[in-house]
Every structure is written in structure tokens, then in C-alpha cells.
Amino acid sequence: MAEPGARILLLLLSTGSWSLISGQVMDTKTIQVPENDPIEIPCAAYTSQGGRVEWKFEKGSSIVLFYYDSKLTDPYKDRAQFTPTGIRFKSVTRTDTGKYICEVLGSNGQLRKSEVDLIVRVPPSQPTAKVPTSVTIGNKAVLTCTETDGSPPPTFQWYRDNVLMPSDPKISQNFKNSSYTIDPKTGVLTFEPVTSFDSGDYYCEAQNGVGPAQKSEAIHLEATEVNVGGIVAAVVVLLIVLGLVAFGIWFAYSRGFFSKTRGSTNKQVIYSQPSNRSDGEFKQTSSFLV
Ligand SMILES: *[C@@H]1O[C@H](CO)[C@@H](O)[C@H](O)[C@H]1NC(C)=O
Image (cartoon, rainbow, N blue to C red; front, side, top):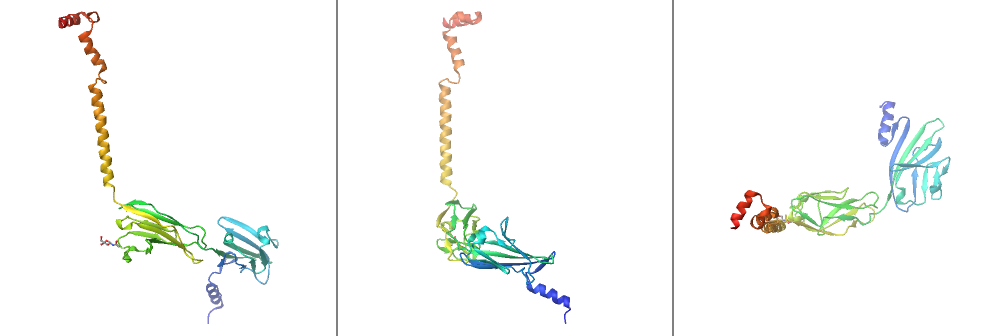
């Protein structure tokens, strides 16, 4: 025979999602509904004792109070209907995805609150794959796959030459020479390092269990060796340029472009008039000329 207290504790544990938070009773559940379908979002906080009800819609960082003073606000009053136990939508769209919070203020002053996470199901649209067209063997390469419409958010898979890439390349005969990781949640495929076996046509696929999976365009990735030929050609071109510069300097030097002043002096020594000279030089010059 269990104690009455233990029985209440057991009851609380067995209902799982119910918990007491500073006097409020909180209940959270998730409901999925196809886009354009009707849905009733229940208010678990409602009891037969009644009370004043308010509804809030929370999406990201914004919270909108859309039912208060016994009235639905403008954007809701034509498409939804209030009942004490819940809000009925005639149809929902993807923008209705979010958290619906029902608050009931009882006549005894107790505030009860329940929440529903509504996921309006939307099939994925065609994902976009970003694939580098040329990668060097031995380097890291990152391929990404993105899709923005799917709700709930899709998971991603990658294909090379129409063959599904397993999450662990080592288990597959086709991919055992490759070294990569795939994050199915973000759609990121990382090769580290790229090998010569990684060349191929790559596409990704997004699926979320709503409607068919969607494939991206295929993009060719080419794994290339370090370009030795290119490096040799660059060095040869550099040597030719250096040779031309050296030749140019030698040519200019031999034509006297860098020794103009000294060259003029030499010519003066030979051809200058004696009047330009000092006495000592004059004698020397004249004796040279004679
Ligand atoms: C993996 O590498 C081995 C050895 O280089 C080669 O014989 C084999 O064909 C490669 N497998 C694939 C699937 O490319």
C-alpha cells in the first residue's frame, strides 16, 4: 500500500510533461499539421472552473497577444474561432508555425499556463548545393547543401555519380578510399583530405518526411594534383624576366647611361681647351696633345 503522498508523486511522474513551476501548471506538446489543413490547438490549462483566458503566439523573439478581453485580434478573427478548450483554425499556413501559449487566470488568482508547439508541415523545395569545381589533393574541401522551405527542417544526404554516400566511407566498397564526414542536419560534406578518388558529379538531397525528397543540381568536382607543370612554367618565366632585366642593365651601362658625368670628364681631358684647365693640368694636357 503506497502512501497518499507517494501516489500523487507517481501521478505527476506518469504524466511526464506536467511540471509545477512557481504555482503555474505547465504543459507542452507538439502538434504537426499539413499546410492548408484545419487544426484545433488545445488549451490544456483550461479547467471546468473557468477563468480569464489569453492566447499568445511566440515565434523566434516575437510574442503576439492574439486573444484577450474575450476577442481575437484582427489577423486571427476571420480565420480562427475561440472555444474555452482551444483555438480552431480554418486552415494554417507555414507562417503559423510557432508556439501557442494559453494562459488561464482562475477566480482564485491562480495562473495556469499550457503551450503547444505547432509545426505546419511543408515539403522541402529543391536544395542548393555548393561544390568547389576544382580542389587540390591533400587539401580540405567543404560542400554545402541548403534548403529553406521544409518544415520540420529537412535532413540531407549526398550522392556521388548517383551513388548514395554512406555516413562512414570506410564501410562502403565505393567510398573506402575517401575520407569525409557528412552532417545530415546542416548538409555539410567535408573532405579531409581530398583524394584522387573524390572527383565526380555531386548532388545533395533534402527530405523531411513531408512529400517527396528533393535533389539539387549535380556539380562536377575535380580533384587535382599539385600543379608541378604550372610551377615550373612560372619559374621559367621568372628567370626569363630576370635575364631580360639583367641584359637591360648591362646594355644601359655599356652605353654609358650610368656614367655620363665621368664620360664627359674623360672627353674633356682629351678635347678640352687649355683655358679650362688649372696651370698644372695645362702643362700636362698640352704635353699630352704634343
Ligand atoms: C581504392 O584504392 C585501391 C588502391 O589504390 C584501388 O585499387 C581501388 O580501385 C580503389 N577503389 C576505388 C573504389 O576507387
